[in-house]
Image (spheres, rainbow, N blue to C red):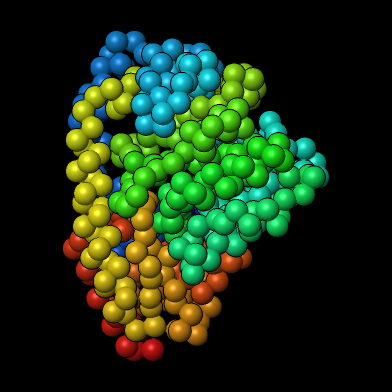
Length: 388
């Protein structure tokens, strides 16, 4: 047995995959499980994207490509970001990666030294603080509160800024809460970042899954493009979770460092997958509109259902496809609640502390599944709560 490096102990996993694995074992034993845990659209990848990927394979896109991505996809991304965020982007400011997670990792490796600090919203995606710790830096959580609609407030961010703060990692629309930053919120946070020389890693993977208001990118705020790493991808918007395709839009200097890190890790992103990405961005977008409309229907259905459950309550999320449900009235630790819901009710969910210490008292429920499954999940939870 080798002696592992100390940094390995600082890494966190994603609880959703652990719950999914346990649920699969129960299903193999013949149990019926309602899956409300995984953040994965239940729609198929649109046919024109699938066909573009297949055609690319047949056309010979099976070899190594440039570390930063195929020129045609970098151009398509630059055009897309220019149109959707209202900023000028050159292909040289784009780096394509196998999924969006490498951008989080590359940002930490590129910008954080031992003793530096990265501020992030808690609860939040569990990989955020994990990669900062792996880089030897100190993750600094900022609580986002239900009474503030689960958005990071500028004053709370400022309270945690020190001379060692080098990176702010922020996600809007937000996983796990569905919170969305307003333009005023983004402008106030951006002003602090520019004044203190802090780079913002803006995770915008749910930018198209928005039901109310507008998506405001940090990169679109005057003066902020030079201080922003914009992270986006294809998994959620185009139902391409298994294709593994993401990207960063940032300064040319940071992009070059990301390319270097890619050479040292992934080499490049699969070329045929990148050609499918071109089809996604330049092809018809009605598939996205239909998906978001269906998510909106599910959102309204499940919010009403959760608020009728004994001891449960939730706010109406404005983006993404998650509810962050307040279960404090049940008087049970959320880890126990997650386990009992799965074992006794056959409903897979996520407990709030999987997303940070400030998630105690909350459960995350994904509505990226059919109305029929949501209805069945609510029925099972209601019956289980009645038996408590």
